[in-house]
Amino acid sequence: MNQLLRFTTAGSVDDGKSTLIGRLLYDSKSIFEDQLEAIQNSSSKKGFDYVDLSLLTDGLKSEREQGITIDVAYRYFATPKRKFVIADTPGHIQYTRNMVTGASTANLALILIDARKGLVEQTYRHSFIASLLKIPHIIVCVNKMDLVDFKQEVYDKITEEYRAFSSKLEVHDIQFVPISALTGDNVVNRSEKMSWYQGAALLYMLETVHIESDQNHIDSRFPVQYVVRPQSKENHDFRGYAGRVAGGIFRAGDEVISFPSGFKSRVKEIFSGSEKLKEAFAPMSVTMTLEDDIDVSRGDVIAKPNNHPQTEQDIDLMICWMNQKPVKPGEKFFIRHTTREVKGILKEIQYKMDINSLQRIENADQLVMNDIARVRIRTAQPLFFDSYRKNRITGSLIMIEEGTNETVGAGMII
Image 1 (cartoon, rainbow, N blue to C red):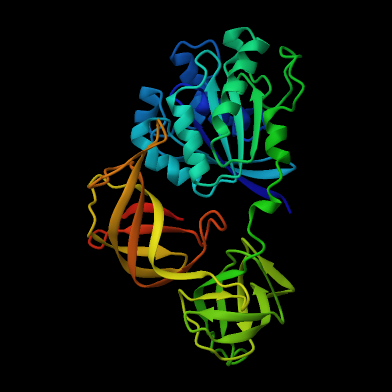
Image 2 (spheres, rainbow, N blue to C red):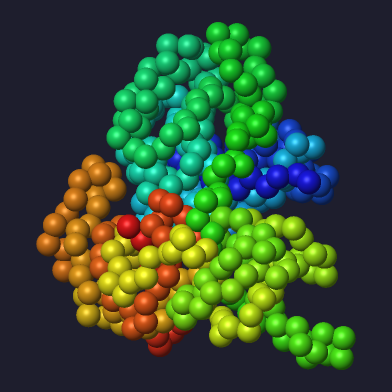
């Protein structure tokens, strides 16, 4: 089975993100002939003497006109070794929330740096967001090497500066590659113009980065999404719990405990569709049956008796505020966490982050769109969670406005 790697691209405006994705799709033969014809025609209409591959990803008309990325565009491609989902996210500061959305499920972030400009404000901001969202792997692509005559000293200076800056971040796996997305150097194939670079081409890095250990296989968590009661003749007494494993490994015979009730039982059987499985681990979607008829419903969490999630009503988190309307302490929301939805209130704003200088701004009385801040919320019923650092699924939540049902904030539990 081909593994799936989700990655996000980030960089300043005009760093060539869309061209790079276009190049990956083009060189890995993942685009249709009619798509290719359409972008060849657009490119010649614009008077270019090359095929503008960025047109493959910028789907909104306003994006193409301005030559920028506004919304998150998801693209899918596959090679014999792996399947890929790319979230192409915008570079502008006013679209920070779009970047957070695209990066929230990523295993890896590609950070593009223009070789002529070096590290810019956006580089710091996107690296900080990648570290805040606990994306385990970063590949820094020093792009537009063709415009600096493929010089090694330009690349070395940028990688040195980035290493010095990133030592303050919580990212353990950072790789670097010098590329030219426009000409395809070191993207899918090794470049002959940079014989001084001994590393792999970008696609090879994407195909071989080790993501098996990114999931938390220690803390067993199973948020129940649905109680399965077919009540058909053959399965009259069947009662199963369907959901997606958020952490750890469950096997038939394992002793388990359900929250909030605290009742214990054992796993009887595990199914994927009608197929019986020996074990289930993150991120598999399965149905589990238990040996005892205990009270378990949607929003409950099944865990192991010796390893509980935290249970609290006062929760500290980092949030990205996503709504145009500012928010002040005292406002109420629905809080959606795994499969559980409860009412909640924003109790206090502890500080805001200045994402450019990484400094804290104290005494903030409100949050405006795209702000990232540390806050405390209180929920009407307890949530069963882990810190976001330990588990990105049980450690994240979203805030929903009561009247409009709009998602207004995304939070990472501290």
